[in-house]
Length: 463
Image (cartoon, rainbow, N blue to C red; front, side, top):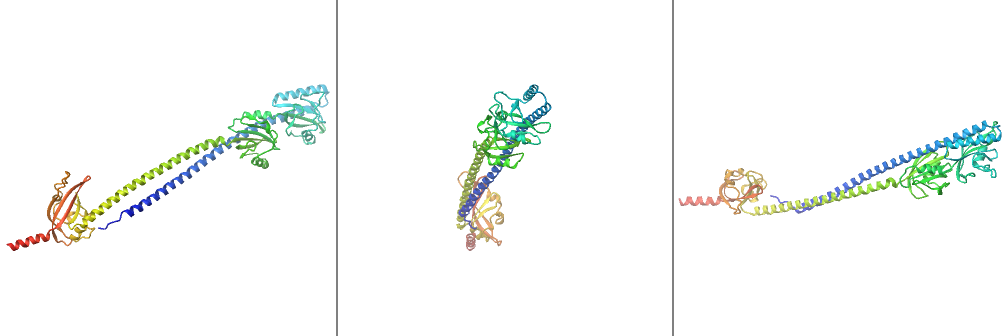
């Protein structure tokens, strides 16, 4: 029977096993990393889009509120100009009372205004405002007065932020041109808007940490800015912008969004801009990226920790499996070596050694038995003993295995059939051994044919 070499096969198998376990763990880790990265990237994109939609909604809502108020201001200025044109030709005292009453009524409708004033063609304020006869207010040098004087046809003008001569506060002026019946210039009607009104409006907007709302005019100057619910007057009039906001102004887009770091405070924000109707204003609403990145990063850290634990668990299980297979392979190798030694001892015996199971099947057979009976070394293994002898199986297996420890050996004389059909007289030594749940029979067949032949011849000579 051929003998296989065990240890090299075992070592090669364990090397391949280690390689496959390492590759499997690496592939699983890579797949897990790709899936987690894609998953978290999708979550981040969703968070960004949600935040983008939120600030865009806020910017639209605020711009609509401001547009509504500016529409109200423009409507009030139109009413004043129309009524002033209807009053032309009335005596000055009666005219002054009616105009001031009319302006007071308009202010009650628009309490967010700092005042309404009417000038003559020379720019002197004639009606409205805290007028002091000793100190007249002259607006002739103001840019919005000159622009209105040169304007045709009449339309609403919005001034750059300037210090009001009436209140000594920074103000914006909404202006409409007054004309005489012949269309010549007769002065202006102006409404003073305190930028603090916009700050109060923006302070009511609920934003997260580092949330900012600002209003800029077409010259990019900050008219109002609120951060975390608090107004920042120090930025008033600043035209400094981030490159992304500058691009929004240059593109003339009505609305949009971008992510940028604001130079004034160094905070990265996701911002949305919205133009205020047809007015020269732009509302910008920004939310610090930390408001959604901080919880997202915390989630990424938790997921990374769980993935690391999963990978460590997988690696630990792989180590356990490897050593379990290594022990099993070692046990098999030891068993194979023991079987090889047993086979070698059997082959070295001059007697025909063979092992039977409880069905009489030859489990193992020595080379000497195969040679004795003329069979190929591998032929007998797996064959039933009935191929070799007519002796009933019960005579061989009876009285059963000895489990008392005495190891009784029984001896029988029978005949074994060779491959060519001839019979050999053999002396069969049998020892039954319990092996797990199934007993086996260790048998040794010794050829006694020459011995019996000699005895028969001697007996014949004696007779």
